[in-house]
Image (cartoon, rainbow, N blue to C red; front, top):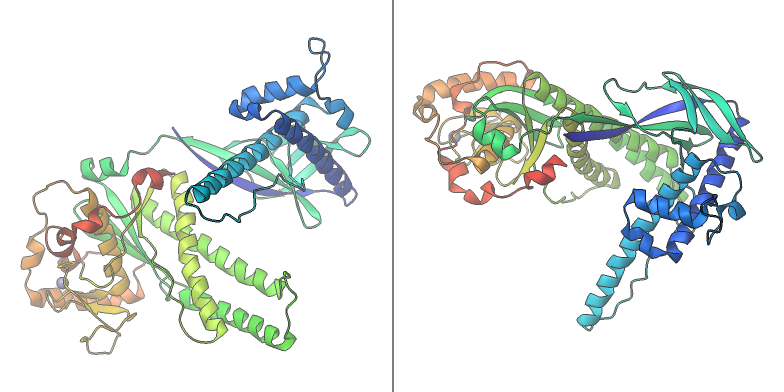
Length: 500
Ligand SMILES: [Zn+2]
């Protein structure tokens, strides 16, 4: 079984005075966690144990019972009257911090030895244990009760004693079919929120290689991400490379316009102020807006991609690896805008990955070389042009493509998406008889006729309806470029990684 996890954030409705109790509970939690961190520092051998065994070992070292009357360290001396569930949550927080600290330290030592072995100077400072403890409190079962949709009762420390306090919860409800784990209470500004990790178990999808090689009904959703108006062009391909549906997720132009305006305001403010205080965020409100804009867009686009893949019965989503960012020249707002558009693509891939995982879909990536330069039908070099222009030379970024060799005409993003999908199929293709060679023989005239129609409409609609796809757009995996560039076949992430 595979597991998907995410966190649902809900608002705790509380009167202002309760804020202090939350803060007191958190301070106590961190006091206890820090104490246990020090105990672990004194007994580092504990880190070799499993979490469960380490927990018992630490309790034995610190907690007085009838059978354990004289432990070497006493939690009571640091904080009395700690409920067992609270103590265990703090121990686990301390264990997590200690494990991460020691792993960092170990890596630092290895780097130092390596430098010494090479006779190089090593100036890097060693990692330090956490100086400030400001972790959010995890409420294990026993620290909460009567947890239902819309309400919860939490056990809080008011500075003198423990109290049960009833809260109303507002905001998103927990998704159905997911299992809730121990919630955390997290401060955001002046309010306190309940963060609930939720988990879903589902059957592990078959490995990508298996699916491609043994499932003749496999459908995959190939996605070309862009920084122009079409943020994502999605095409559904069958296992034989036939494109059966496409959908364009637009909105890039609007996003760029809004973001450029905000970045322009940042630049203007900066030029007025002159000096920016070091280490201080300038124009905080504007940056917050810009971040929210990108975040929102990444969620919207990734959600559309996954929805489209599901609606079309695709089991695999494939992207291309994103190339290095090459900043354009121009004003600050233009350069910064382009950079953020570039980042956005990475974020769309990340979000699609986790959204797809929840649905049991696989996500993979392929080598981006030539996906937009070559014809998806015959593998020859394309000419790119804009509507109303004569197709001739290659005009980078133009929306339409034409193949001088086979006469294919169509939308550039769609062509690139098909190429991306075909690269994935080519990667796992075992020596199969060539499929769809008939596409090559189709008379040129016919191809051009249909293609003009497709080019015209593809630009406007392309909203996910499965239209009849002209033959010329069907892939020629046997011919041209997929077969002639075996290097691509092995590029990309291993699928084990894609499963994560
Ligand atoms: Zn062609």
